[in-house]
Image (cartoon, rainbow, N blue to C red; front, side, top):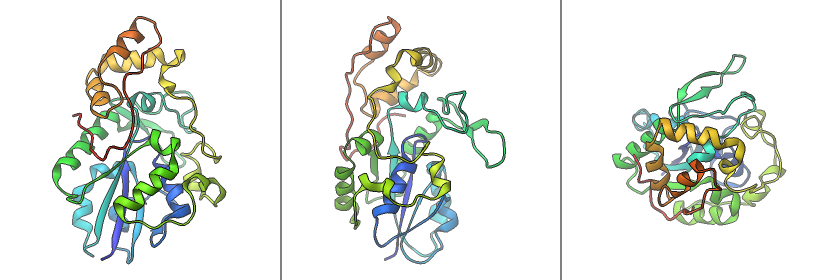
Length: 260
């Protein structure tokens, strides 16, 4: 049976990084030089792999477009919501890229507009798909933190759980040719760096985090549901002006998100 791998989920959660890794190593699948809506390429013969975070909203359309009867497998990208809320994009250098309610919409040759769905809408989309039963074989939840901390383990997990074949290492993705359309969201091509943990906890982001969690307190439920915290003590510390205590953890335990 022909297959199609769908990479979707949170924006600013490493989907482009992950897709370039897949382009470097994945065998037996065709991959594209840019972000492509799955519904537009599902008719292509053979095994294919596409990535587009907002495909999480189009699953009904994707299922309807699957006229070839391909096996569809969904990989959902996740990331600590606090780091998503302080993420930057080179197309919008003077502002945070994604908020709880809205995100910048980037179109080639046009000024970015703050009109795209934000973090909470995407999270609701993920939960709706998880509850829909559209993927009875399960959904692979891939956390950005796990991917950058141990890309080889994530590669092995994908091979084992989805029956994929690889040649080469995820960690060496930067040595391959990366199409121009994928370089932009990466904010530059370089070797994989885990970088400092908990960027959101830096003093320059304190006002941003407090603002977003004050306006949208449901973010606490998302944070706990995704396993990044176990309670709100980190936030109490932030409000008090202290260094937040890290109480949660990350990891791909095979389960899905529980919030919203």
